[in-house]
Length: 87
Image 1: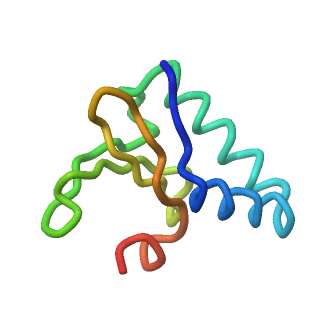
Image 2: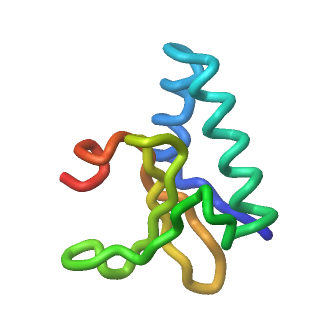
Image 3: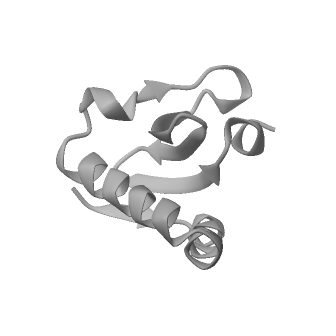
């Protein structure tokens, strides 16, 4: 599956690369898993509600989420803790 990453999300991803290389690697592994098996239970994929009603989310770790939009293609739009992405 083809996935696009918005520039703002890519910047955040690069920050993880600089400050915590192990977490960065786990993020990349989850993105690869998402590409190959979007329905994998470990991702906890779910549609968001309220003001984020057009978005979906999947989990990287207990408190690390990736937010994406799914129209004709998947675009990753944000990455961070629950509080960071649902502000």
